[in-house]
Image 1 (cartoon, rainbow, N blue to C red):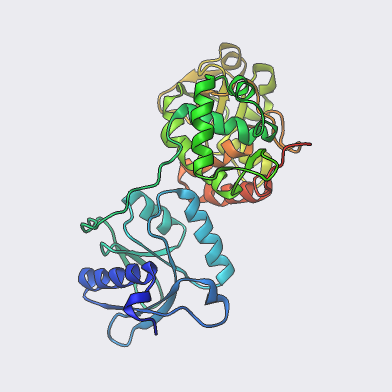
Image 2 (cartoon, rainbow, N blue to C red; image 1 turned 90 degrees about the horizontal axis):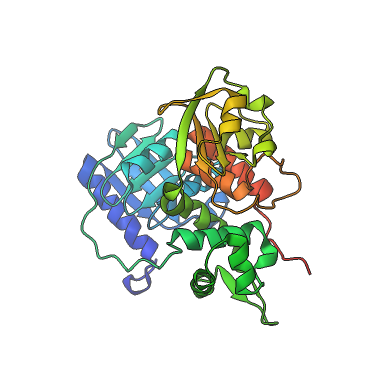
Length: 354
């Protein structure tokens, strides 16, 4: 039994969430220590529920102080699958949108406001919309916030040989000012997205964090700045007979996932082109402007088609962009595909060629 002086922050969060559950439902939840053996050993603890009338059960818990990216949903789902039993996410507070995503993926949750989703034989419980209680919050760490810095990071991700290159070379590849590269590299080094090795050369730090940060921030910071238009087509499979390489365009999101994994029948089409209204492509594909259409053409933000794994078709965007767009769709069927692309194409730490 831990003493109050050495209790971990996770334990405080578990206790707050258990209290909020009781206040929201009138039923009882009690945090328990992590399992001492078995598959539950690596998790953050257990939560015992007593819903009355003999309905009791205990769930393994994953504690995350905040969950604000849809990539986390895919990872939690993978953890649950490996565990072989329902997992409970305990966190400070969930937005209604994030709660729906968790529920769609059959993930149980409980936050410190009393928002909860349990899908158990003993009870089906779903409460959402409770406001987060006033809490002291530590200052959030600085993130790579500017669109131009994200363009720099994209250039490095898609061409790892640039990581140790002079600033002018990086600026030329990303088509940004050298001063932007200077600020961006300082930021990346400060937060260890990049590190300097014993030989004095820069390299990527924790690769998983590089990928997740770019994929999380792209739809928030950079994508809204890009011109985009929507269209409709007479034939749902029009994209199968169009050679995008003729137009310097690439598919992303669902069509790209279908080409990379062959496990999806796309319902929507997203592609990137130099202009959101490429006339020649529109004519060949017989697209028509439609604000509610299921075809979206987004202005590309890179100067040339970024290099990617050799097995990626020429008409498909770099996997990190496909991954980000799939997560941004916030659909459960796309989260599974995002995870597959993350594992198959973005799992290995890239090393610049000697």
